[in-house]
Length: 377
View (cartoon, rainbow, N blue to C red):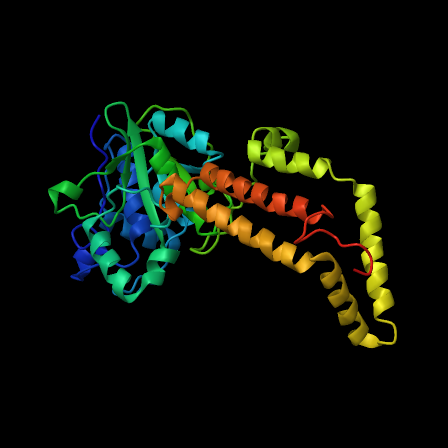
């Protein structure tokens, strides 16, 4: 099986070559369409990025001004450009659906927020490396927030997954083909829109591209896609598949620290706690007789705080939660933006368990710092 060919949006392949411009700002969608069509047709049909840009003009009626970022494409428009070259595109129903289609010969179009939460060590392009250095000095927000971008990928038995960013330069031998990535790395790239808060699931920004030149399982017609064009700031309207919730009891039992904290709460005499709380409130109300309006409200709050240590307990719980979370994040040895969902669950679980222990202390009247004090003391 051949390597996954890049269709570059840089001056070497794209419309800029026709116009004499040095670099294209917004042809990533059409370049990725060209790469996806080539792969999915086994290169029986292999349009250049420039030809894909021309196709975009035909199917959308939009014009493009070189040197101005005015030509960003949507997934819905990509469906039309792919159809122009005889291909079909459909929205992925799940991540597993996308992987299965890729292993059946389809290409994947991935709408990403580059390089938010990208896996370490995956080469994007020399173009990106140059701009990354410039952004680091002059516009670090560009790195933190990322930029909307369209990429593509394919899979074969010889090379596994290959991911192609159209900012790769096909004049350079090392950048003519996609980058080998694992399925986990590709999913992390696809998840960048989720990490950036723009989508709720990674598969919602994936198009599955097929072509009749290759005999694979038939794709769902593109007509099932939303009819309203998706802009660069909108997501595909696809309902998340139902998930089976994990019972809270099993979550607690699986975490020793959390289990111990909950056990401490179960040992609390809640009837007595209710009585002590009523005493504290009654004492606060009694001690503020003669005050009126907001003065009495603030007086009651102050009296409750002084007789229960509630404010200290809240601050201590917050401090313990944050310090525990920070310590556990450092213990993972992974950069913060590279941590998986599972890592974050472990970190938050540990912080919650530590904070619950403060709550247990607060509920014990014998605790000298937080315990509810006897009435009038």
